[in-house]
Image 1 (cartoon, rainbow, N blue to C red):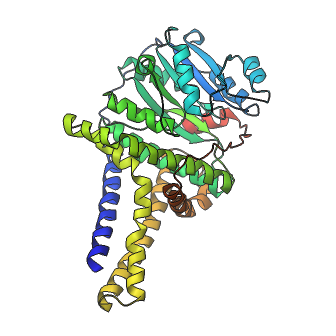
Image 2 (tube, rainbow, N blue to C red):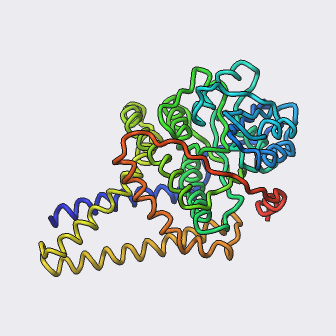
Image 3 (tube, rainbow, N blue to C red):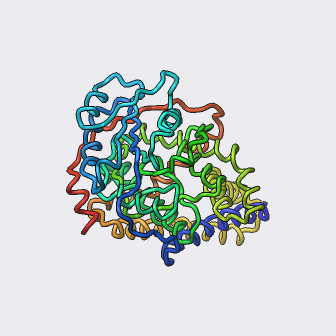
Length: 410
């Protein structure tokens, strides 16, 4: 039993060290060279929308104020089974409408159909936003620089409109901060692949021309994998900012994260073999790194095993008492140290991204709790074999976009 506990704990430690060390790459010099270019790229800006009348106007207004020639981008709202005033508002604000087929039931289906129908219409790349977003005026300009520098897929920074509503919205925001800095930024700095993060991303038209047919319920992760398998890496841009509305209700957050975890698990089963073959044949670090990323839901659950076994061993006196006392002390110190480390990195990213530290205190203190709630979610996803039905998250937060833009400049 002691040997088993040691092996399980060592596995968890090695995985944690891998995540920690690769995260530190964000502090290295950026080896991904992106030059400044005059506006040249033609973008189709796509907004999948299902009953988003309360917020979509805000997004389209922010896009029309982009620091980019209006003739070089077209805003297209992808109408997916709406029964509210989304089409009317989107059209009134200046968006073209594209009605999706009745078979469309997910965002992945929406993007698949849109990519097919827009192929060959003269666009260099597609840029995708969620309807509840607000976009920084420099976003399209930054994506033009990336595209003209020779990169076919890019992810912008995902910031929040409502970080300080409560501990749940703060938990989401801090999670994205960490992903932005310690995952996406870190990978881009060493010329590895970042990951597409649902919204605020660009993909070249020719990259999806041959077809984008997602097999999982997380189309963003799947698109990231598809790019790696085709020999392209996702480039992350810290200055291309999308402000996203985060859930504030635990039930909505539970079901949303359940869908994410289940989708990542699906991708693990579908693509791990192909990614590993590419790693072996091409010595492509991004392929192996993506596998480590995809097994994270499993590792969160796996990390409980040595703790459970240690408690069982201690309770039934199945090992030497001095060993058990030492192991319990080490485990306790690990939990305490992990909690304080989470405080440090959260405070760091809030400061780095010029967010409201005072208003984020409760969220920072409870961030570890937010992350721990992912463990039961992952357990349910591992047990439940079928897909989870899409549960809509109501978006209703309209904010002063100028205040958000100002924050990014100070």
